[in-house]
Image (cartoon, rainbow, N blue to C red; front, top):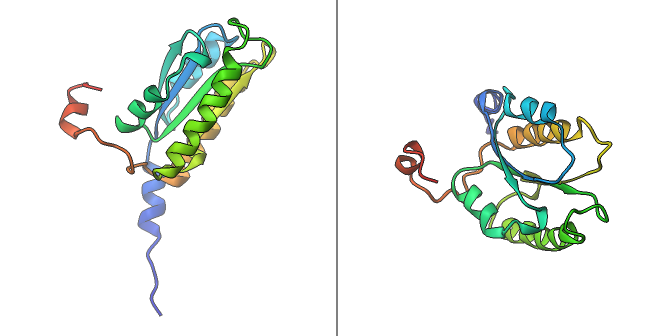
Length: 159
């Protein structure tokens, strides 16, 4: 009977600090305290990118993040019916779920992608969702399936 040593794997997952990208709608009702809490997480390295609307996020933006080494992606937008651009978030919902299927098809676990639809009364929820995504990604380990950029380019800050 063959045994496997999982102690080194669990040690790696404890020390692994996931790289997350958060696409945040500029008009979404987030609080500055939420963003400060997210940006200072010690369990994950989070890059926050503000966009005009969740509906304006191109799937190429997310693919670029994954190819650059992101281990997880969060997209935050307004609740349906509350969008600054009327129906931008409804288009985002359709487009981004199709992109989730594409990433799953090419080998990225669906659990690494999270959509967060916020209501103005949801103070603190954005930070909680990102922390939860960080824990999920940490348990999955690094996402190496789509990272296509060389480590030299990443070390020079070329993304």
